Length: 259
Ligand code: CAA
Image (cartoon, rainbow, N blue to C red):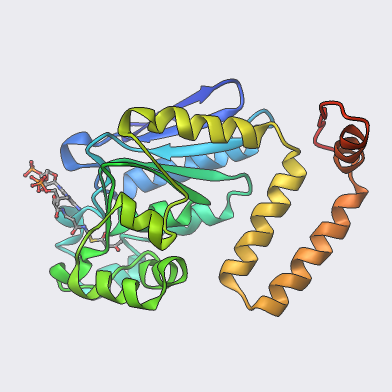
């Protein structure tokens, strides 16, 4: 598939990088961009040699939200019948390998929601997060009212959704929205380093860890703990578990084969 609104490349033979590429519109997210993003993520997910993906934007904007010009004209009937604006956003949740958001600049509205759909967020020190939809007479429509409180707690999520104020990178790290903050010029290397580390582990264990952490995020504690235990025990059926533990016991590097 030829892409117009994203750029796609592979680094280190095992990391798939997707760069949102509508710089003039601060990477505002329209249906075409989201279709392309979904297709690129699925292609990387299906590619045996890819162990991890990164979604990133420009220095000025990860993404400034859903495309307001495109959606301004919709009526309720249009949006509801066509499932417009956010129809394919949850495609990212079907991706089984890890997806890192490398965020610099604005991550607002749908941009913040897209970052939160990724498995974790590494932010540049100029990143700004926000859910300003209230200023447009609407509310977050791609999971913001659900994922933001789970990430930062009710009080901060309410503050952001109700006042539309932005959170800077330092506040986002303190609040637990992002896992690391790095200087802007180190963002790409930091995200790539994390992705290469992940790609070096057993894909089976990586996918199981991702599935299990998501269970904690999306379900009850008791269900999550049981789910985790089943997956943990199941990993003892893999060659990679034998290899990883044998390597530790014998003080040698592990050589995982994804079996
Ligand atoms: N949609 C469409 N175009 C956008 C956009 C968006 N979300 N955000 C920015 N742009 C465009 C601007 O219209 C402008 O285009 P022109 O040069 O053609 O006028 C260009 O990007 C640059 O933007 P600004 O001139 O406004 O740049 P700034 O530095 O003064 O401000 C900003 C930057 C604070 C991000 C500001 O652009 C802004 O507030 N953008 C809108 C943010 C927003 O409300 N996002 C939520 C969208 S709704 C949503 O996402 C729903 C959902 O939950 C799925």
